[in-house]
Length: 308
Image (cartoon, rainbow, N blue to C red; front, top):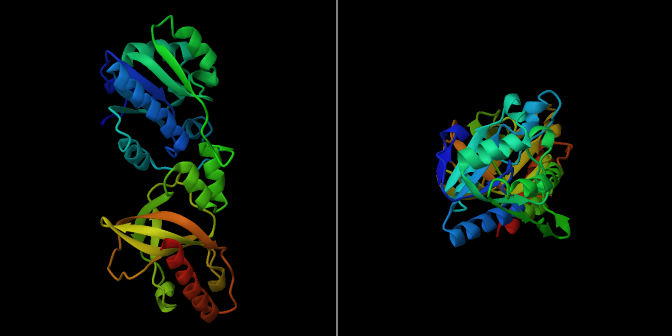
């Protein structure tokens, strides 16, 4: 897959099969669209092109009050899209100036003149152009004018839930990573740098790696204990991860720390990735550190059972 960091870096194709979107999460609904994209490209002997944007438009248009946390960092999104056998990925910088592009300018100048779109595949709820004025209706009127085919993909439904990035964010924000994983089609991940903590986990018998997420816009699940897998230097380990402000220790700062089972290497300043399997329990204030330590033993047993 070739990656371009601006629309202007892309060289027009003779038979581009294109889709557009922010693709936060690259979830099962997005994968349904991309699967159809690759199917059509193969039939038509064309090349697949995904046009996506960064930062997320809401972060640019409402910088002070968007309150948006994303399912993926940009690097994670690119990595997930790379797994889908695409030919071209354009990651265009979204700016206020770009947001003023009308839907007609977007179709004529970008989709047709720059990319060379011959087939456009979009999701059922896709909007584009200034003030999100462009819809499937407008596209269906412009398609014959600019000589491209248009196909709309219906929503993906799992457990009677229409899959969307927003619904997955809500699930993760509540700690329901099992539901989120089903809607995503893979286990939710969190990457970060291991930083020095205060050593309390080690004193309790459960040493932890404190994680500082690599992007401040990355969504972090609800407080609690989770059964997780941990990728360290291309090796996968089982573990349990804690998110919270450690109320038993009268702390106030929110921590993310993982106890990696059967692991004793020095990994300070290294990047690790955690994938979430299931939430074990809430963050609880215990009457003593001894009681907390006993509970951590129970949590480990439960995590091992979940992780198999």
